[in-house]
Image 1 (spheres, rainbow, N blue to C red):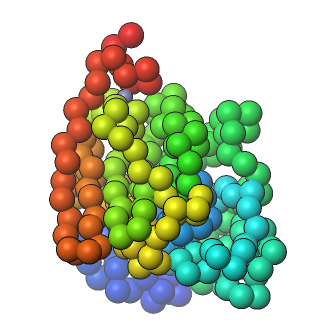
Image 2: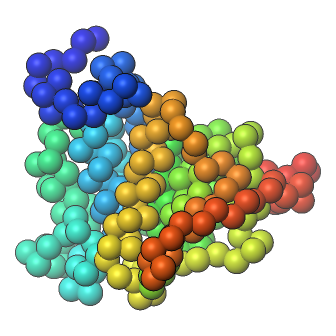
Length: 247
Ligand SMILES: [Zn+2]
């Protein structure tokens, strides 16, 4: 299927990149990405994926917008207070790019409903604020053999990691070394730190869909907003990991 004239114009500045091109744009249009969490990380991830023209974006969040969200959760504004985050997000994302199919889940992502949600998508983005949901995402990534893009932020710091089942360690292998919670669960964070880390996650998802670049499999990229530096930490697969181990 050829791109329409309006699509060629909307995506002109990325189609002009050799590694994207019209073929890459068509690949993006076939991508179905689930973002779990519509807050500090979910905002930039969803905005950039929808702006780039992925085919379908799913968003899971059971929370409503509160005033203390607005220093970083840029999908929402002062008129959205008390509204479900997924409704606020659907409005903003639909206006940004009406071409993208939006699937909205106003519910908690739990072992009861998560399997049914995940089967509609071919990659998972961790924009959550708690360890339980992250563990569930990691487990579903392994079971469904689909990649999982982890992100977390706190204060001035953040981290991203990509899990591709069968190609490297999973998130559980990594957290033996300690896990970082993200901001929307009450942990302080400066908005641009969530913006930077969420943008890195979106970049990794787009590269995965395009089949280009280094995806950080077996590596955690650590963002330090104070020194403004990025460091890589190597993570090995743990043979005794309860998810991806040799058992
Ligand atoms: Zn593992």
